[in-house]
Image (cartoon, rainbow, N blue to C red):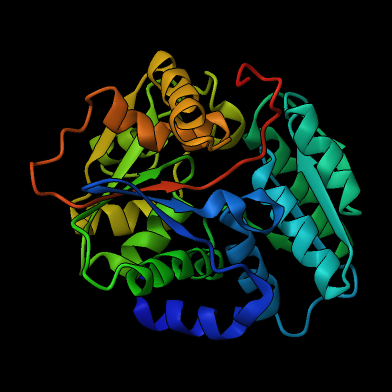
Length: 304
């Protein structure tokens, strides 16, 4: 299990290689954690830095990862900053904006299959062939601990405390990190698309199971199976999983732009959709934080 000890170690290891992202007060009892302003456009940069730095020594062949987009971008950015080579496997359905940015960071990009799971299988094979470090997008202890530094930071930024934090979930790496960092101080709630509900089904079935993946948020939340680490932490903590449909996600994304001028990807908007759709109804005095975790989207993609 990942604890605050591992999260603290990750924070020291990463140091100032990641941004301390701001917190914005949306209204009297609602805050946004603006992690979409992180290097490479998502929280995954924290976990990837920690995962790569924790591998000592790093293989000469560098790193290989698989991603719907954001983990690959984080890996490519971290590898570039650390001076190591990166090879990133993504589905053929990965958004063009993410593929272009991967190449901009200097990664070798390989597109395989229609889903993350197919790209991941190819990446594992490639890492075994070359001896490169395989960096998992979410189900790795160092990745989870690195992601948890976001929660550690949030506790420092809101010293008066908060009651609840809403987290969009794909494979569960961010959720797991948040449980490890703030689980004893606040309620952590998972939010998933109805069409890509890997954690929801894992909790219902007593362990990770394969689920169908589709919908507007599949490029970032489209894990076919929840991570074991996320499942174990969520099950132990009694985490609730709330489901939101594509219409609610699209509406929440539009409202984040119209009301706050915050541009985020659909997967990120899922967390806010729990509020805007009424799927989660805070108590009158409940202090709620919505994690806005990624911004790798095209402004022409129905936003403006």
